[in-house]
Length: 288
Image (cartoon, rainbow, N blue to C red; front, side, top):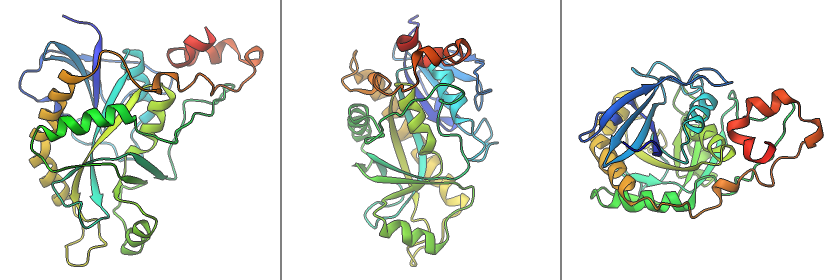
């Protein structure tokens, strides 16, 4: 059985109840940032190892703000994960992005207020470039994988993350549209930015569940709407993940694995042994 985990998926716990997944085990990982949302589920699919993180915990126990994004990403880093796919529900801020469609966004706007956004601090500082927050290469591969399912999929889009857990007001929704946002969700930030700090490739499979509240001809978004579309799209997501796992290139053809190469700014002589140790899974190749 191969040991390397080729891909990690962060999303609902229903994603890993998929045909063909064998050798399933739970990994209980301890991180400097606390415990992940749930134990990491690792299994074998198509002779390759894959990991799953239930973002909100099994049974959806955590609000978007309560999710320990740092622990989730750090745990995957400890396991040696290099590529991460987020499966997320989102609202549409564009007429042509209809409920049931899937979008692979390429830009991200962080409008959250109460979340820990970085691994760095406590004596070790880094300024990581995130001009393109989603890995272009992994996003392209994910787009092609979703296309094979026959689902309606769009490549590219501006994704705004709000704090939640409430949905938007009409004033907010219309403002976001004026800003040029295409999609709205509650979990892409800081998840994508933490993945970049950890030098992981990160892409998002965003499932459009509703028109948020801007479209007056539609009923405002409800939990029932979101769950209904997600349930309908679970099979599509599973099929796309299986296809992506089969078509991943053996080497990464992007710059994500070098994200920290020129980002660490703290004087090496001033970095304490404790700071070197607690972020070693991320910074070890640069600091020893």
